[in-house]
Image 1 (cartoon, protein in one colour):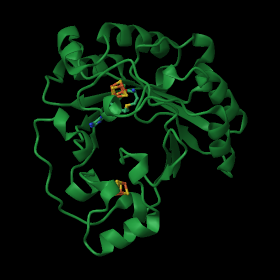
Image 2 (cartoon, helix red, strand yellow):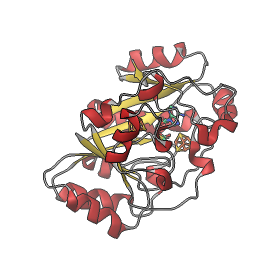
Image 3 (tube, rainbow, N blue to C red):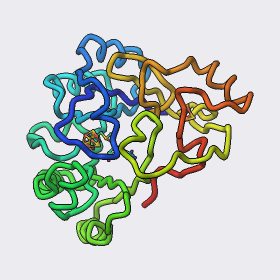
Image 4 (tube, protein in one colour):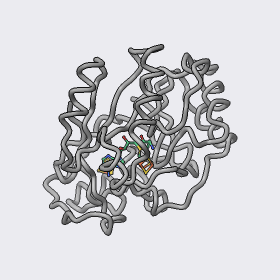
Length: 247
Ligand SMILES: C[S@@+](CC[C@H](N)C(=O)[O-])C[C@H]1O[C@@H](n2cnc3c(N)ncnc32)[C@H](O)[C@@H]1O
Ligand code: SF4
Ligand code: SF4
C-alpha cells in the first residue's frame, strides 16, 4: 500500500498522450497537503505526482520537508526540465525521470521538453545518488533502442509504460477505444494505493482522469459486480486487460 498525491496539475510540457492539457491548472494548497499527510497513521511511501509536473509546485520542497519530518518516504516522477538542487537530493527516496526518446525532434513533436536538458539533470542526480534514479518511457511506437542502450550503459532501470488512452481525451489519439475484457480490478481487490487529486478528492487508484467523476469505492464494486463499467473507470487497463508497465 502506498499513497500518491497530485500536488499540481500545472506543467511546462504538452505530451500528446497526457490529459494535462485538458485539465484546469492548479496547485494543491499546503493546508490540504498537510491534512492528507497527517491522515497517514504510519510512515508510508508518498509519491508526489499526478497529472502535472511536481517540481512546478512553488512550495514543493517545503511540502517534502514536512512529509519527511513525519517519517514518510518520498518519490517523484519528473519530466526532468527543472533542476534539482543537490542539497535537496537526500530528501527524495526515488526519482523517476520521464524520457521517451533521446532524439530532440521526436521529443518536440510528441510535446515533451528537451531530452538533452532532462539528460543533464538526470546525470547530475545519478552521479550523486545512482540508486534512487529510474527512467520512465511511454511507448507510442517510437524506436526505443537508443534509450534502452543508454539505460543499460548507465545501469539505470528503465520502465516502459504502455500508452493509456482515455475516453476523456480520446481526441488526442488515433487509436480506437479498447474493448472491455474483465470486470475485475486488482487495485480494489488488493487495496493497492490511495490517490488524492489536486483538490483533495480521494480515489482508490491513479487512473481516473476527472476528480468530479470519482465514485465511492462501494459503488465502483457494485458496478463491477453487475458487469457495468463505472463512469470513473472507462478505458482503464484493469478492465481492458492492457498491462501498463514493462521493463
Ligand atoms: C503524468 S506524468 C507526471 C510527472 C511528470 N510530469 C512526468 O512527465 O514525468 C507521470 C508519468 O505518466 C506517464 N504518462 C502520461 N500519460 C500517459 C499515458 N496516456 N499512458 C501512459 N503513461 C502516461 C508520463 O510519461 C510519466 O512517466
Ligand atoms: S510532462 Fe508529464 S504531466 Fe506534463 S504533459 Fe508530459 S506526461 Fe503530462
Ligand atoms: S480506474 Fe477503476 S478499474 Fe481502474 S484501477 Fe481505478 S478503480 Fe480499478
